[in-house]
Length: 287
Image (tube, rainbow, N blue to C red; front, side, top):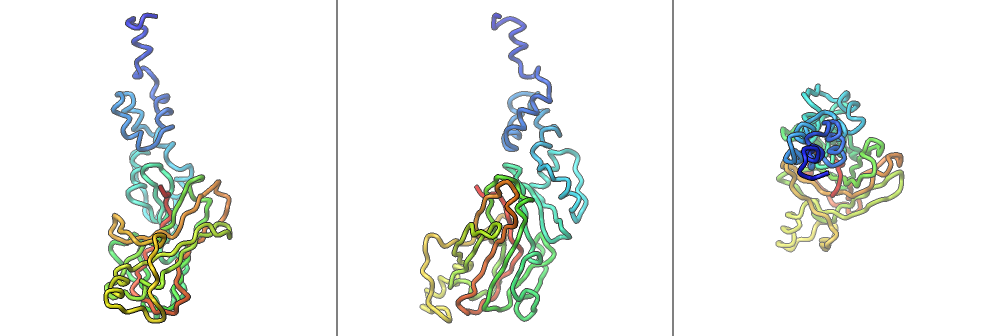
């Protein structure tokens, strides 16, 4: 067949393909690729916005999370729902947990609220108090009054995570103006999956206090200042204005491995601590 014949033009015109075929092809890429695919042709523009395409990017169990939402979820299309879940996570489980999606991949993200965590002495008002903050996604946050035994645990069922995905857990927190005792000794973190230790690390929540101690040459009560090392993890600021520090990473596998336990603690030094404000522990894909 001659390339300049009318039949050859039709064969080479991608706009002649049925929309469902183009939608199937696009859905084999990523949400990011789908958003830029309309530049290819007008046929891609229609398929890239179709419910058939975005249905494949939503988790197969998304409807069960919608049904658990504290507030009704309204959307005009599956694409709108996808980005709604990326930009505005739902409060589920009576407001104790949030559910959302990672924008680039569609993998599921969760945050356990402070109320959903196991905080040692958390119900004793001498040591912890519960406060409401306008920039928290949850109705309550836990603020540390004073303890010498700091221990926080969060648990999540691996079956609700996106299978075969590399995840990391993050403590989401703030530091009050009068915070002390969180610079040294370093805090320890641990991730266990089905009882097996997957990840262990040292973290330092309050680098500023540590620098002030060094400037004044004052070791913390009960011991010397821990030496900083490259593997000690430090907090970073989030887009929402909170701080986060990585607790560890794990692979979700096929989703049948059981419960993931995420812990943060400093229980050995006996040093008193205060001013830590906990919003929760977030579990999201790690890249």
